[in-house]
Length: 251
Image (cartoon, rainbow, N blue to C red; front, top):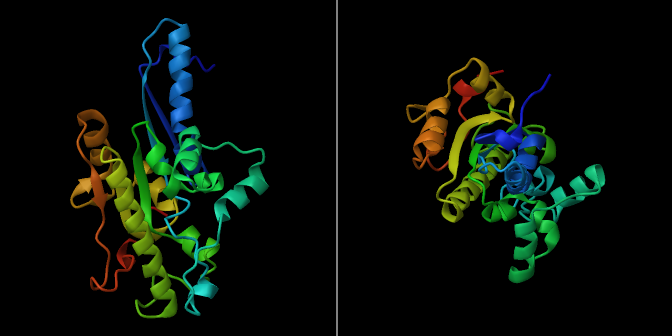
């Protein structure tokens, strides 16, 4: 039987991968409030709550730009792609209250609060973001770049598209760090969605700049250290690409 009692918990972690990562971003503050309320009713101190979204950045700012349009020189992202998809699949929907208030004060559409790159700055719960700089699901499937592959040459159209996505992701992560310096970030240069992280947590030690994923989390969570790790890309600096030698790790 499950005997877990949030009312008596001292530390609670909310996490999820892919769609669960989206949910972690959006619901971390709501979840922290709820477990705090349970503790209050029980006469206990609210627990420490932290969020660990894995591969949930849907989408980097200014994405999705669909590959067929990119190939002919267009760079205009599809408007409200995520909000339309979520509304259609998961209706009725829920959005972060702080972002909705921000939409009113900063005068942007509430629908944009579905976008992680937009709503991230409104999250108050301590958060550690785990992601790949070159997300295969968003590049290959959602971006419709069926020719995109870890073997794509940097100067090919598909290679340019992959580099374009990587640049948007890095810009988004830099924005995250600017608006939330306390947030942890662990971003590999691999061409995967979330399958490699399954391996990292299970049986494959991943390091960035000599720091393992486990050590990065421990430094951030237990010691309060600023932990922002972005793995170096492959190729020359002008043509950053995912690293082929890591392409199948953790699968």
